[in-house]
Image 1 (cartoon, rainbow, N blue to C red):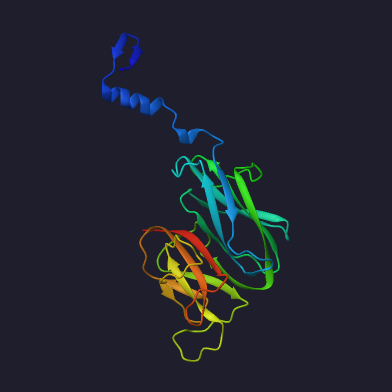
Image 2 (cartoon, rainbow, N blue to C red):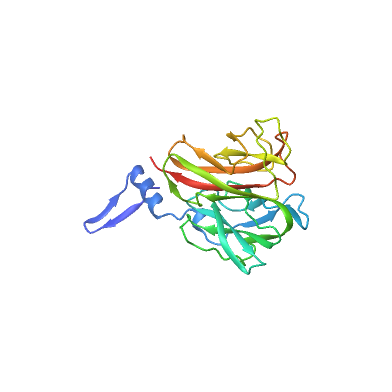
Length: 252
């Protein structure tokens, strides 16, 4: 059926192309209906205290769009020891295993995931207690937990090439895997545009020396994600894995 539009000069019959444009402009897509969906958070094999400075959040999302213009989720880390918290990361609903790193040894955390309607707006804050639109898991980090965290660049930073990826490692003795004198605990691998499970072994983009800085000299402009992970002497992924990641914007 063709739609009729009332104009000052009378009624005009719309063509099929006009009808499609009208419906696209004035119809309300399902993704704009607020309050839909639920999210659940879990960490495989979680024990207390946890011997790593990081956890891999496994998310289950139901009845929620995966269109980034319609909805997304945010990850929040609440430091229950220090009594503070902050937004950690933001993702579209398509990424269901999320690395959360840089958790300080000897502290208790509550890690939240919350659904948010609409496209991501920098600086926005979701309502963490709005069940079932948010869920959390409690994590107590062991005093001697393996620790790695990226300190530069910061999340969402804009950088020019070349730049240095700098990080801190504690409770883990680094070795250079290129030498025969290996007496420490292991080394690190770095992954570019990592979008998988940080506990699964994959070929790295960079393999370490014994330092805590990596010079990035060549990368495509745009949004890039870097993940660092500690590995054993035989390049094996540790259990539980210790990792951290940062998302940055590389300028042209």
